Amino acid sequence: MPADLRGLADIDRLIHEPARLALAAILSVVESADFLYLQRETGLTKGNLSSHLTKLEEAGYVAIEKTYRGRIPLTLVRLTDAGAAAYKAYRARFKKFLEKT
Amino acid sequence: MPADLRGLADIDRLIHEPARLALAAILSVVESADFLYLQRETGLTKGNLSSHLTKLEEAGYVAIEKTYRGRIPLTLVRLTDAGAAAYKAYRARFKKFLEKT
DNA sequence: ACAGACTAGTTTGTAATACAAACCTATCAG
DNA sequence: CTGATAGGTTTGTATTACAAACTAGTCTGT
Image 1 (cartoon, rainbow over the protein chains, first blue to last red):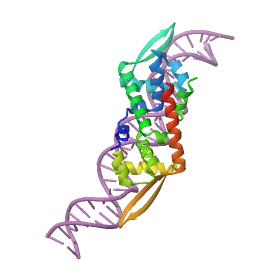
Image 2: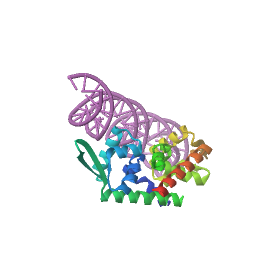
Image 3: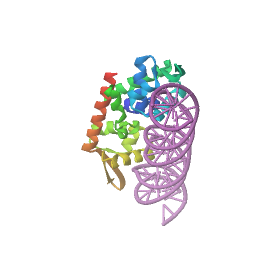
Image 4: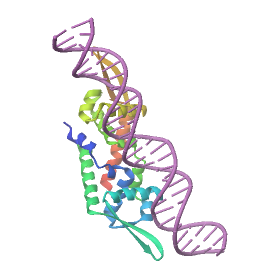
């Protein structure tokens, strides 16, 4: 009966993970961000940030562009349309849960 | 700077897990519930419900009382004060995140 | 009374995580 | 040319969440 609870079961786990939720939240407002900026904002280690980004990329939620700033590598990340939609859906779902319970 | 994002990192994972979040939500409004009721409401299998409840019990978030209804066993679950507080804190934290972003 | 099905759970097995630590590869400073 | 630093990736490990198998007891039909 409580569809709001049942709905929790199939929530998007990729976004539900706190580290990636933080990433999505940042990326949803900045158009594009580089690796180190994301690291500073989230407090993640490079290793974990890398693997979370890879996971988001594999899901098609972010696009990763490897380029250079002068001669040093620069990794730019931006949310794809699919990623933005998933993030929005996640928020809506969770918001509903918080309201209804 | 975004304390709301940084705060996500140390959110209570025990409650964050969707299955257990659903359990907490139910238990926060019913005083006490039996095993099968919880299973129906959450849609979890018995096995998974059992292990999630054990985890919540080990954390001190729920109290589990094994009794009988007639001759057949009946497991009653209720939220402890600590569990209720943790659930409340989780909600507050998440609500803040949703508002701020 | 006893074979089989059902109730109410727990234990076990397994695949997917998330995090940390080690490891690259290149650039820059002394 | 030696060491430190930047910018990441790969590897290792311990924890998980779920599903499937198992247990223990009760009920039903014959």
